[in-house]
Length: 130
Image 1 (tube, rainbow, N blue to C red):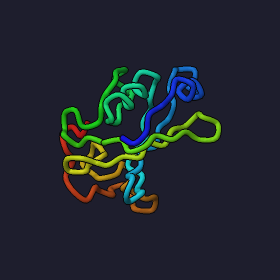
Image 2 (image 1 turned 180 degrees about the vertical axis):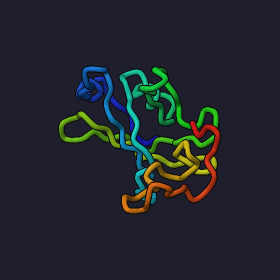
Image 3 (image 1 turned 120 degrees about the horizontal axis):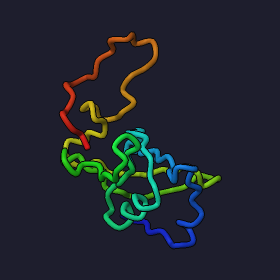
Image 4 (image 1 turned 90 degrees about the vertical axis):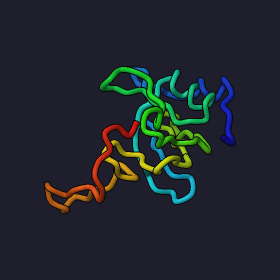
């Protein structure tokens, strides 16, 4: 990872009432948006420490590092914050099969409106892409 955060920079991040900040995850080379997840202060610190994208699961109420079970990790190249410091952009290099979505798709944004309710992924879903 080419970036590190100072304590002063981390203090700028505006977490919501639940202690979370949205994180847009983008492929550092293709610039494809791969996913959107949430980070709390601990997952953001772990992301910098490990160099791997780590998030807070709102549904499971636990930390998770992308790829810890699937092997499809997201190696962090850079982390940026927006002008209000209430949203993060995490630039990554996908590892493993380069699958970011739990359905087995490269990106969570593989569907378009107008594609019909039965619009299917381009390949079978993985059991667990975390």
